[in-house]
Length: 144
Image (cartoon, rainbow, N blue to C red):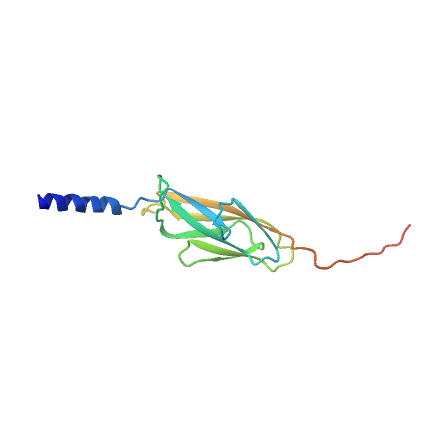
């Protein structure tokens, strides 16, 4: 009787500890964790942080295999620094003049241990707009 109970309990433990593979993910922009498909910041802002969350088919947190790969659709708008584990990144508006516009952030992660089997692709947009006016100019021209 005791052996049967132990076997059942061990089997239940194994079932409880089973990890489900990730089938979906979300990219969060902002410190409060609101899901935002687009984040807008001014050119003189400190920047933005994005974090990733992956889930199985039932919506439970799930691991990904390997380090997620991050990329940007355009250069010269933001500078990106990815965390060592790939689960987050910081974005700072570039210091270059004219570095305004929208850039798409792309993240690719493996949802299964077999590479290429269940690839999860996430995207989010970052828009950098002009900072508040700080100086002005007056131009004079001669009337005809």
